[in-house]
Image (cartoon, rainbow, N blue to C red; front, top):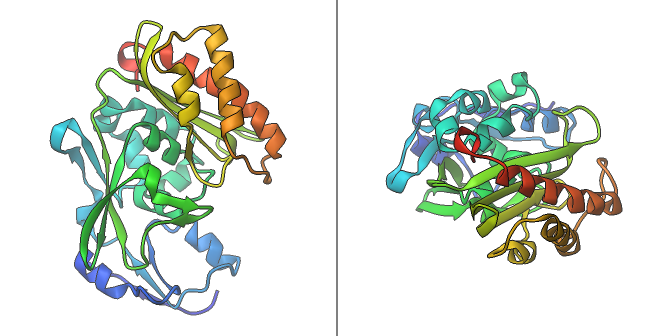
Amino acid sequence: MTPFELAEPRSLREALELLDPDDASVRPIAGGTALMLMMKAGVFQPARLVSLRGIEALTAIGPAGEGALKIGAMTPLSIVEQSEAVRAHAPVITRTLLTLSNVRVRNVATVGGHLAHADPHMDLPPVLMALGAHVTVAGRAGERTIPVGELFAGYFETVLARDELITELLVPAQGSRRATYLKCTTRAVHDWPALGVAVSLDADGDSVRDVSIVISAATEKPTRLPSAEKVLRGGSLNDARLHEIGEAAAEEAELISDGQGSAAYKKQLVRVYVARALRAALAQDGEARH
């Protein structure tokens, strides 16, 4: 690796002042699990890294307004996984983290870094999109709130400016909604998925009042499927409807080929896994919800 400056601010304001909106070689670093690999491979050669580890205000988990839960951007994924507040609010997040990479990565990687990296194969973004989550973003000009679904601009791209930082994640109250996340990997369960499917639905028995369907890994960025949702919304979830929704999802999604599989292979995965995820969500009750 080439030499670089490491800045270690103690406050958010100081961190923002150290970033440079006009210099792509100045980058914030959270856990560094992805960035360090890019540096070792020579893909990224920074002039300055701004470490966010010393900003203790970005590590809190607690209640927010209107029944929402806030998670500080510098909270390690393993802490989120172990949090009783997260488990009670949206246990689908806890379940998803159990198969996200491995415990060594989860001990270091952070919520904000996970989202800001914008790798379409990551597991949490589609889950958070299905839950209707938002991020709070801070910059020198002030704060703004962005739905997680609007954070990603493309393959490894976000809408964040170079001098902006994610400060917290906000997960709204879920009420009686049920949610699940399924992924298909071509190797070990904790490996990068060929497809990830997150669904959240509000149902009365087998009748679905509302639903969110989000896929990832098979697409350039986590993608919601409104046409497939429309097929289900207001109807009953039976075998015929599941088949119809799987077909609608496969036709709607713009799929890509990569090391995890061809677009044609992933299209068949979408047909199968969207239906499986909906069936799994509908089967939940009590503590298994979300």
